[in-house]
Image 1: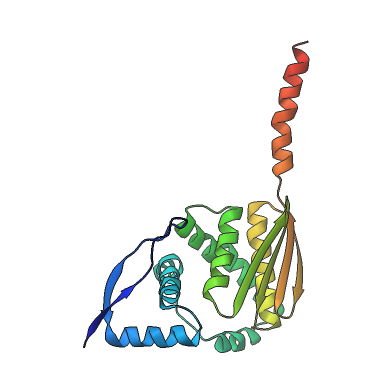
Image 2: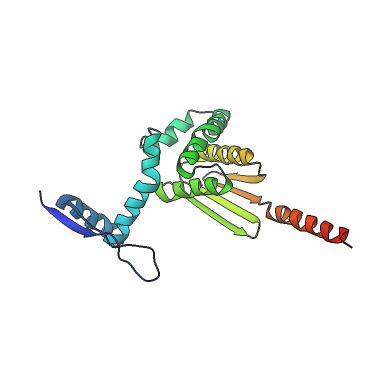
Length: 206
């Protein structure tokens, strides 16, 4: 079997990419070029996408003995659960598996870790898309998927359980293929306390 070389990335003055050349089997290179053409991507972009998924998602999941399952099968399996069963499963996933995965990947379970966890799912699962936007302290998250109402029940309860663990109040809205959450950070209150203390000290000095 022939072995070819593929350029993964190039360094530009305004990026943090590096240039690295690796040797790959010829049939792998042919497959990569074919997939890149199908997805209308450069080979460089496709390889970086694949390596990012491997480095930041697949490797972590391997530690938890995760298996790949077609989304159609997951939809069918969820249909056998009642709404309450789906909620119970989500709470168990939130308080156990998701927390353990975040602690392994990010070394902490914080708001940033939770958001990053969902962002990675949105990047690496074709059936899920995750958006997060904020205006100051007002945040909106949207979990869109293609797996039907029962999975919306699951994701709604999963999000609720994780935010409850964080002590953050979140308002959730569920549709058949989408869950929207709205919450506020407590940044203003946290910053106001030191200022109030400083003002009290200043007043006591006069």
